[in-house]
Amino acid sequence: MSEQLNVIDVIQNTRHDWLNRIQLIKSYISLGKLDQADRVINGIILDTQNEARLTNMQLPQFAVLLLTHNWGKRAFRIEYEILDNFQSNLLDDTLLSNWTRDFFDELDRCANPLYENQLYITVELLNDHVHFLFHYNGWLENPSKIIGWLTNEKKYPYATNIQEINDSEMVVDVFFS
Image 1 (cartoon, helix red, strand yellow):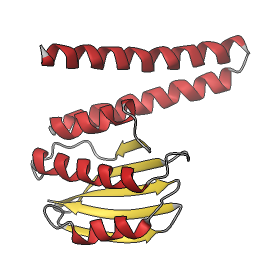
Image 2 (cartoon, rainbow, N blue to C red; image 1 turned 180 degrees about the vertical axis):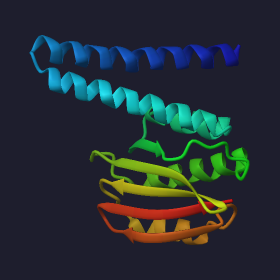
Image 3 (cartoon, rainbow, N blue to C red; image 1 turned 45 degrees about the vertical axis):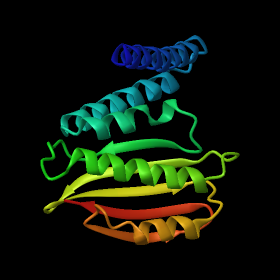
């Protein structure tokens, strides 16, 4: 029964997302703003290409985590871009999903929910590693907590490089293998 409820939840959320996009396109067309409608359509195309690359990575738990993140009540929204079309037999799906979930939870605790917080995730194959670039824009209540978590979290990433963390921005490279 639980699996059926999950499928229904996915269908409901996906339908809601698509209806919002269709209504936006329809509104732009009715206002004669064809360039705006075209921009939304191109955004949909890019999103679906990224979704295809994500699901082709053969990391089902990780894919579900990213695909469903924005459906929940979180202090930040995510956008992701998968730069390479690859199947990742370099990564352990469970370890990657657990690390990412823990990272999102820590970021959720530090993000001020009164702000429009956004986490951009870029994933690419780099040499023998999978490179994740996490770029956060918004408001962090306690950046030192994130720094501490990233510094002490040694369970799975091959390497972590903190480029910048302050009250309103975070840029972190994480390498997995």
